[in-house]
Image (cartoon, rainbow, N blue to C red; front, side, top):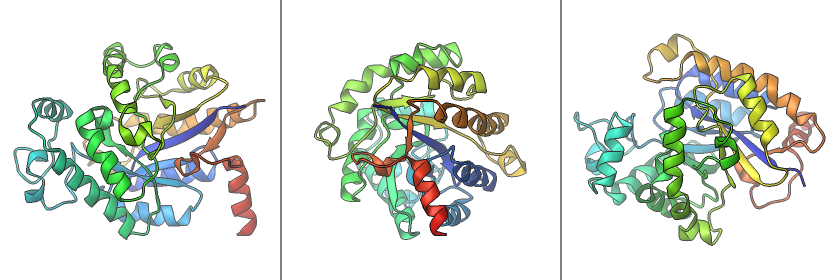
Length: 305
């Protein structure tokens, strides 16, 4: 049995150029899924792209740091940074506050619900949730998010831990690989959350490409895809886009590499899916079901149109 692969682009809604890349890659059959930022500057444009591409799985990219809240700021005080209007600007600051017990799980749940409901009010059928900068690695974030997912009838969440076989390829910077390896110690806690353990909320066997973020070149992706086991369901996490003037106005460490990832997907995904026992491309909406390949779904949708 061939493995199943979700190819998910984070940061949908951040800029029009990222939205355009998501649309182009999905229409080229090399991207199956994306996660939308409820408070992203290009949110409305992303919603339009999503409605125009019904075979694209769209999740909610929950932002708890480095952004602005969807909730009234006064309702989520423990999530706020020094200006008391925006979220904590630093991931390190967020993690330190979380580990010291200074961030309320109720505030996390309240903000997650506001972001999810903004997508739902815009007519998005949410396939899954994940988090900006993988903050749901931590139990104090995963717990409230899983409760809110159940409340909102969302059936899936990103498994935020890199697979050992992918990490062993030694892609990405050494310090990032070390961080990913150390945080892997939280994997058992995530998998023991009751919603995950009892399969009320579904997930994959793990995510690939996390340690390679910022280094997902053609050779890197080629090696990852060819190392994929013969069975299992995995998510490839990526950040394609266009490095344009809109991106210049955004605080992000991924700039020129968004162009690199866009061209890499266009080259490497068609090459791997042409092989015998190629991975079946799906989105999160297909977890727990037996579905034809997403390429077949693309073709059928095009035939109907």
